[in-house]
Image 1 (cartoon, rainbow, N blue to C red):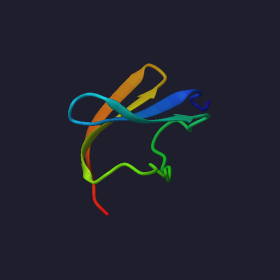
Image 2 (image 1 turned 135 degrees about the vertical axis):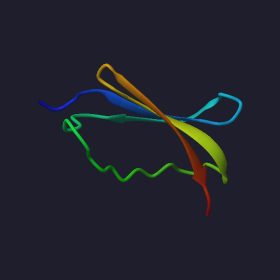
Image 3 (image 1 turned 90 degrees about the vertical axis):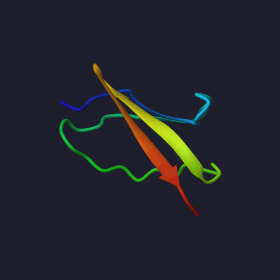
Image 4 (image 1 turned 90 degrees about the horizontal axis):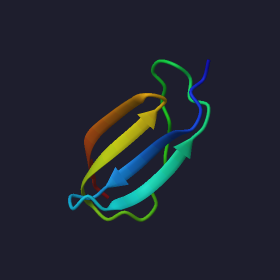
Length: 64
């Protein structure tokens, strides 16, 4: 059964929301999604994925 209404949000180091993407019908388990994050400048960010009742937070570094 796919997970509906999953959300990926990216925050800067000050906690400001910089990017939001709704991901519909993600499969259960592991999956890979290619996402274009637009014009975020290089830097360190935190990505938060909320999928169903699960929440994951990961530090990411954007380089160009």
